[in-house]
Image (cartoon, rainbow, N blue to C red; front, side, top):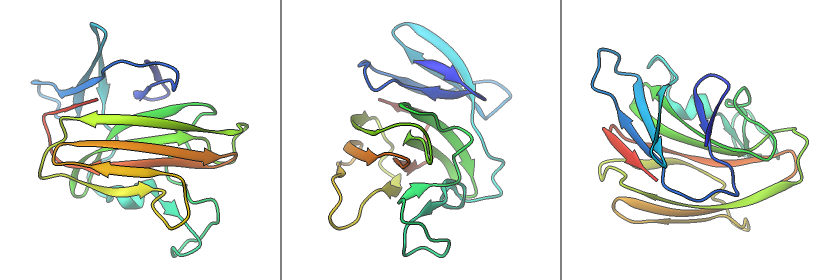
Length: 173
């Protein structure tokens, strides 16, 4: 795990191990601690609460208002990197969301595949974006009350990902 760009947390597809995200008890509500393998890093969530996470993620398909056959996130391109999966927290109009993006839209990568198991999700939360969850794709979304197992497979020049929306003090993977 390492920090990339502006406080995004990147988790390489080849590594395994738990990551814990915890809101800090300080005067800055957008500060969170990322803990993995005994190392702790402070990150700051993105967003000022003025835009929904759906607007921010900007998932486009041939059937959305701004359409694209890439079935990808257009709103997160500033964070995307080739051969990298990123996760970060977004403060949107409906609260705090965990954003995951795999791959790089129009990047220089052959695509990839990733399975994540995410535990400790708040019961009152929900996956508001499942990129991709349409007929004929290879992604799998298996959700329980406080956990999810997701497998993504994306091709060159595209992204996959998802957004879990919920106000939680702790989200762990």
